[in-house]
Image 1: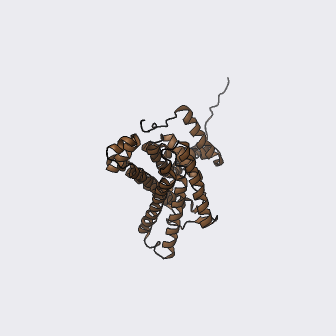
Image 2 (image 1 turned 90 degrees about the vertical axis):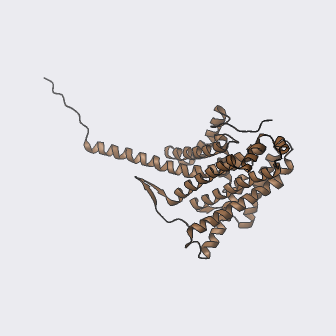
Image 3 (image 1 turned 135 degrees about the vertical axis):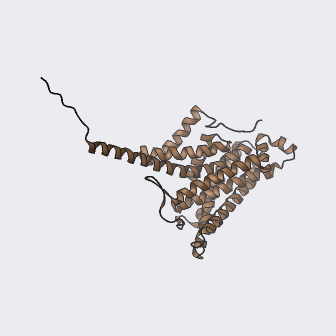
Length: 325
């Protein structure tokens, strides 16, 4: 008579497997928070790309440098406030002042670029403003390098250590701040474009400039306003990056600018909600890929995803929005 033995799983082994699965889930959840933080910044910068493309059908490759200059403006403002002893005792007011200064500087710089580098070429072949944008980008990079030098500038620490805990996942205060403020900016922009007279003028100019001018819309002012809003959002994103990474230099706008452009294309170039979705989607993809493969390959994943989307769905996730000719 053959005796059969029943194999049983050790309780210790079961507990260990459950613990490991829980740790993996916590790591993925933490990466999701990281991705939302990064994606929120990408989305704010991508909005400038997509708005300009909507009204002019051109890619403003100097937009990343507007983001960089806004970050510098926020750095010097924040440093001055902390040196005066104002920043530590009035944190909320300090943040308001820093973001306002960065947004004003970014908006004015973007309007200046439109006036000097793009408006004279509005009737030129489409390649001319593209070359002008690349030249403006290189000029701004080198201007900041000459004025402020190549050294890294270190942002003062604004938010206290610690954060909010959701189960075993910890969200630092700076991440919470970036995610919620970015969502507030995106919601405000959506309402601005859809509900205000200026937003309606932007959509009319994007549809047909000549017809909009015949209807009494000041096309030049509307385009300048589009650059102003996009530059202001880029300036705010620059401050967020400075606070998040704590270090900035004259080259910080290059890679985030390309990533934001990628996000705009992923969501659907010229589509404002698409830029928001594309930015968040790209941030999550980068964070999850860094969890699954070595982090050095996250840029390969981001730009490889761009190529894949252009092949499969050239109009992006939510579709391209351009004016009818």
